[in-house]
Amino acid sequence: MVVYPELHLCGATGTPQQRREQLEAAAEPIDGPRHQHLSRIARNLGVWLLPGTVCERGEDGHLYNTAPVYSPEGERVVAYRKCFPWRPYEPYQPGDRFEVFEVPGIGRVGLAICYDIWFPEMVRQLAWLGAEVIINQVATTTCDRAQEQILVQANAIFNQVYMVSANSAAPAGEGQSLIVDPEGRIRARMSGATPGILTDVLNLEEVERVRTFGTAGLNRMWSQFRDDDPVLELPMYEGRIDPRKWRGKR
Image (tube, rainbow, N blue to C red; front, side, top):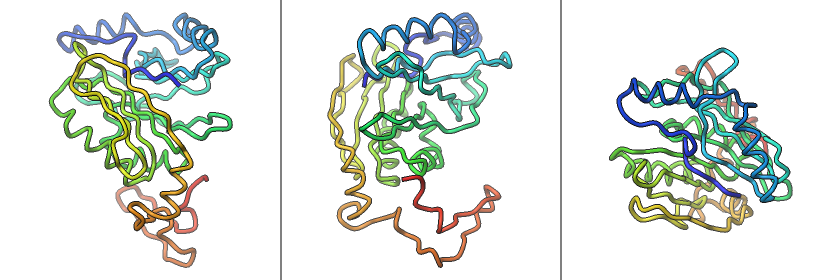
């Protein structure tokens, strides 16, 4: 699986107005010419390709920050629209759904784009949908990359999933990409903003081991509830935690 950072193919610089103009010029429908090229690349190389997010022109005319995923056969298996644009700095319309995809014979992968992981509901929902790995494509150009790396570890710990955070390197971003295991340990990382390639081999059976025996051999959050526990109301969401549904789609 080959993963590129957020807006790798159509980054924008300058003032907010200049950025908006550049993104408007780069925007295409999701099935436009760019899709054809990316599909061909994935098929020719025989790889799972996450080419970085693209600026999508939606059917409604709005701009979306969208992460397409291509299979080794060149099929676009999913296209996730960023749910939490970095406001007020980004001009995108928010997406309205979470996306996971299956790698046959391997496991399930969830998608999050940059600022998404600052909202704990995001990765929790992806984990509930069965994701064992969360790919977080990032274009952080600001000094908060330090805090963002902590959030990558925290999301891994909270949800007992692998987190892969691929950030743009210099001169476009702050770099410091990292891969974190389901107990929050950093497996691999790039130091500084120097461009480079980060590689790893993930054993997804580790996710089930951690969830079965607990983080640090102790904490089993996905086994917290019993079926006869009371429903926990969540007034903020006008929703609830139902103990009978807590373990999710695994």
